[in-house]
Image 1 (cartoon, protein in one colour):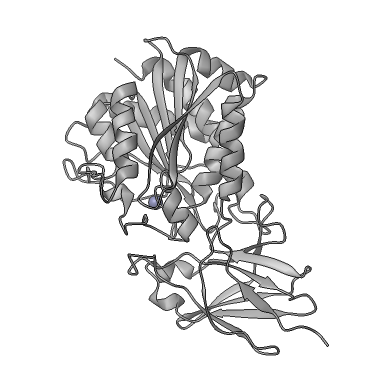
Image 2 (cartoon, rainbow, N blue to C red):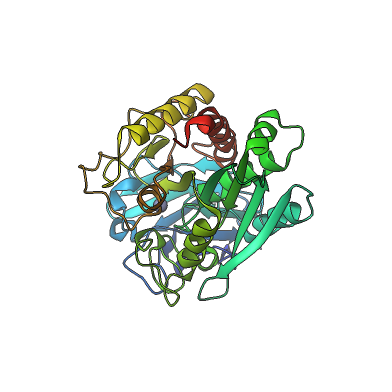
Amino acid sequence: MVAPMRIVIPEDTGRIEVVSAIAGSDTRLRIPGDQKAPDHRQWFCFEAHDCAGGEQVFLLENAGDCTYADAFEGYRACASYDPEGADWFRVPTELDGDALRIIHTPQSEVVRYAYFAPHPAARRAALIDAARSSATASVRTLGTGTRGGSVDLLSFGSTDEGARKLWFIAQQHPGETMAGWFAEGLIWRLLDSDDAVAQNLLAHARVHVVCAMNPDGAAMGNHRTNAAGVDLNRCWWEADSATSPEVLAVRTAMYEEGVDFLLDVHGDEHVPHVFVAGAEGNPGFDDRIEALEEEFSNAMVTATCDFQTEEGYPKDAPGKGDLRTAGNYAGEAFGCLSLTLEMPFKDHNGAPDEERGWSPERSMNLAGAALEAVASVLDVLRD
Ligand SMILES: [Zn+2]
């Protein structure tokens, strides 16, 4: 007799509610809201066990109640047989009224499904270990979230006072896991002593990387918020130790170290393109910053077909930028080039991948393009 399929919620990043899992019928599931902030609802991650031997249908019944419900239009769910790895593929997914239907014939007993490939805590720990044991990097714990997740700063390169200070921060929004993969790609490049682009940059710059701004939220399977229910990318102006200690810790380190460049790495549910958002709405935005934004974006276009400048967010009106976001806050506070990078949950339509859509591998490779782009503006980052 064939054992009935079971739904298992992974301890790290897992998130789903099981309504019913009965052999021979659709498995009915619900997407829970963020813990402590249930109005944020989008991330799902679950495993199906004992499921080989035929087509499976997973019905996510309340997709229509999600925060970005309309973003499920044109979306395909991600799946993997090796969930700690980077090898994820897309499976047929359709919107049926309020429900999202995932249809898949597994080739293995265990399959993990997720909104996007999670970036596992174990991979992050391995990265931090690699940095710690490298002669060229340093690791410093800046603080913790309210649930105890460690916010670590990895620093590379020149310690000369005149060295440019380049910051990359990722996964303020924990469900935007492509940002975790981006950070992984970035760190491996920076640790590679044979990488000419990285080594050239590190000779003249100090590179600071926070690969997980919101480790608590990631572990809990939240989409948008931390363990206190706070959206970290809305509290840079007024960070506090009780509800946004992650931001307070990183902001303090930025003032200690200085900032000449910030790339705040995110994912966007709707837009099927990779793009950056700038600081055009900041009170201090000027011709110099505008020219730097344009130069950086052009260098990204040159470096990769996985970036473009046509599609993105509407521009902020002058003076109307939201200074609670990391990108705008750092741009204003440090008078520097400061950008928010968005990668898609769907695909980068400029160079679509039928099998994988936007993927961990492309997120990691994009980090290399960002290194090339920032290297090309390094000399003009300061007046
Ligand atoms: Zn985000």
